[in-house]
Image (tube, rainbow, N blue to C red; front, side, top):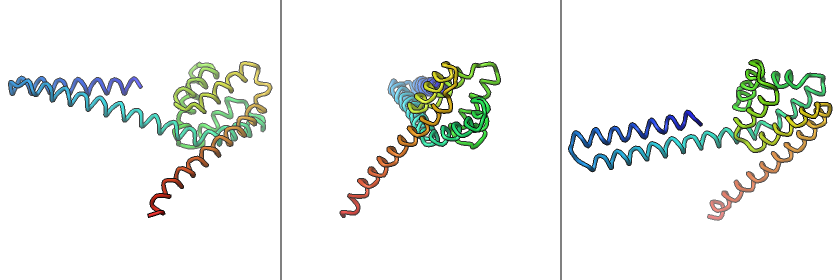
Length: 184
């Protein structure tokens, strides 16, 4: 988000600078107003683009989360530690959530605690479901992790049910959008 704000400020300053330079060259106050308008347009563009990227990241993370939780439960039931299972899953694909998981692995290797790295992963995903999962996972780890495999199994069932509900809602929305063209 800091990069987007820097980009927005740069575009705003560029628009204002262009407006003032054009106003000085043409000796017209109208050019200052045009520069301000350009600055506002650039600002809205940068902010809207950031919001779209965050929304896309959230959707991608929500789509992959059930598979990740199921894989983690299977690997931990097979005897892997949480860190090893996390590393194994993170190297599985090239999707957004897997890249965020790899960043958490790098954070763990650089000395950040597992709990802090997992919390950071949840925040970076921009997804309420992922944040809820990572918070519950961290709480389970803080309690000792003895029930971690059971917790992951329950979370897997719950998250798959949420994904099923989401897909049903999307199906109903698509059907309602097709209703008007069909009636025509």
